[in-house]
Image (cartoon, rainbow, N blue to C red; front, top):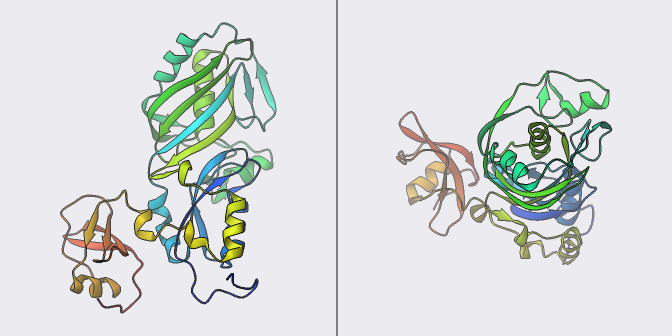
Length: 309
């Protein structure tokens, strides 16, 4: 039975939902829907999607919000569509048209060659409409006032690009699948490809198919979210914190380590690099740990303070 609206749940939900974000909503709009369905305030998301983008939005609830930095760190896969021959102020279809060029001379081989040039580690300049902070303010806030500021380039990795569809013409269109590192701006990629081709381009559609180990196949839509919330059955779609970080290396804690972790005490080193998911013998996530200065240090702790095995 669902908790009456306005009354906080006796047992707040801790876990992760994979939402299929629809077009026309901000990521914050989705968070508001999840808060309403779960009837709790402690909700956050990993990896923002623009309003015109759709697909995988990873949403953490309760104590799992502490895992957001680790949930958004994995590779992303997008299905993107761009229009050649037109550039816009926002690098996508929402912006004002800046230039138009006849793209009839672009054929599929030339486009494939241009796409291949971006595979590997590249530098990108964040778009003015991004959430990157410059001088303590989001770029999109500056953009709304008509400001244009210098943005330092960032290094990102394009793991793979596959051309899925191409329609030639004065304003040719191309659909491609791209797998990339976190922090990659696909709209910037589309614009850069257009620049290499000499005709300009902008993004007209974007769908995130995967974020780390989370895929669109396991995502629920907002209607399903609302229905589960009404029934008090969000657990049917909820991933446990441990399952949510299943793509990280793991370590099973001894009883003494369970107790030490609940008090935030350092552990024996893991001998491995990068964050490690520390689980108890039942598979419950206790913490994310990492070797530093000869000990395994806690990056974030989910185990209740003072808990014992």
